[in-house]
Image (cartoon, rainbow, N blue to C red; front, side):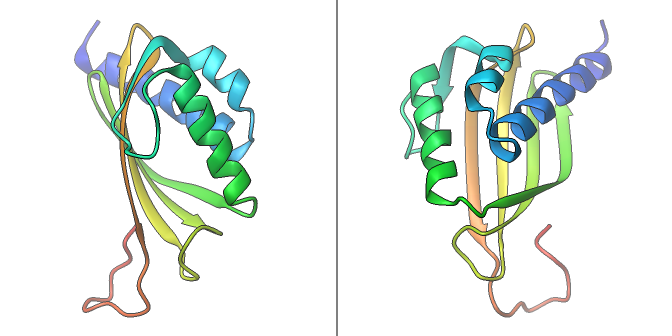
Length: 130
C-alpha cells in the first residue's frame, strides 16, 4: 500500500472519530470504533490511556455544551493526521481555532497532540486563523 493510500485511509478514520466524538457526542462509540488499546496523550489536561481520553472529551462536552466545530482542513502524512478546526461556543466570543494531531496505527488512534487559540478582536492582517 502506498503512503498516499495509507494517508487517505487514516484521514477518514480521524475525521470519523472527530465528528462522532466531538460533534455528535458519541464518545463511547467513537472510542470503541477508532481508538487503540494504548493511547498516548500529549495534552496536559488529559491522562494517558483510553479512560483518560474518555474523561477528557466528556469533560470538554460538559464544559462547553454549546460548542460547535467546523473542520477546515485535514492533512495526513502516513500515520500522522492533523485536523485544523474552527470552534464557536468555547472560550472566545470570536471563536477559537484548534489543531489536533493524531498518530494512527493499524487503523486505530494511538497518540494525540493539540493546541487551541482564541480568535482575537483584532488582527494585523486581513486573513482568518482558519
